[in-house]
Length: 267
Length: 259
Image (cartoon, rainbow over all chains, first blue to last red; front, side):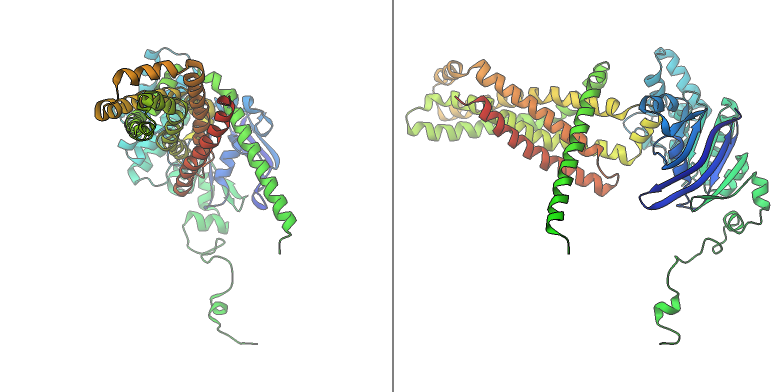
């Protein structure tokens, strides 16, 4: 099977509010696939559905041939051992040091001797450039460093699938470039499949193999970063070129300014 | 206008649903709790956090409560010429009621609130979700060790409270007021029953430990993941746990001391 993750005819809503509608996506093995779109487009919801944190009302999400939304808790936890996830702000355990954060999945899921855990953790931290920060607490490191520690933790068990939820949010340009390179390099070094949710066009287009554009819970465009740059689709053009107005209007929908100010002919 | 019958019915259904959620959560925690015993280091770490950090407030409060009991007891007993009974009065009051109850109330305020805030902030910072995504059950890894720690720490703290309280009563009654020292201790020794008084007090504090710790953990786990949500959950912990302690105390007192 060439796809590690397959989404078919997915429908998800919070109450009466639809978030994703008739969504079908493929995530081939070994590739870095980006899911892009504006705030509220449903891209983080896609990650949560793949991770089994929420269940769709209709359709299927399959990871490595297993339908996530039909698994029981034990099955879900078994599947999650093959997944790594980087949360938007790292979600590091604040009472543990950088070292202990990265060691956490190893301690929980393996019976490795302490010496081997130490070596593995230091290698992971070395890969993200933070070996010498092993003894620090999360409140003693910067946001960019926290993101890199979380990345080291996410790949601690060599997952087949790594999910990134807005990994560039709130980072300075240097940290952003470092994080983007790490995501690409780790994907290639580990031979894993990566799903990158982001609205950061430059960094994402630099490292992604394929891009899905979501708007209002639907795929509006898909292709390689080069194809997306050349796209004539109005939504993609507005998004890629950061245009203030277009298919995504500047003004929140509602009455016009003239109506609100009582201008124009009165009945 | 809302139909009054529907309003009342809706309220009752909501209440039953809430009781169901709480019961299911308690049973879920109880089911995961034995698994946490396989990692005693996590439990001892929490006993240190919950118990050791509560020790100062428990010790100081116990001393003052014992001293006040010594004063008040002496004023009342001396009117009947029974001031030598002071040791018995101080010890019985502490072992049967004040030790377990006041310790539980202080425990809810000191350890309960910190447990709720800690779990609530872990939830707000997506730490619990991150744990779930790492295939680690947060109920077993985070809540269960804290539950055991509360269960173990609470009776020990209540015992410390009562012991320090007796010393407070002794300092005021014997050293300050001048009640006969031999009468103080011998009356206490002769009239305190290990099963009826000490064991019942320990059972009470154990039950309070379950109630307060579960309330604190549940409120933190169910908190809205916002600063306001965590703040509200912390307040709810104190209110609900305190009322539960007082209500349970009445029920247990009626069952234990009904001769």
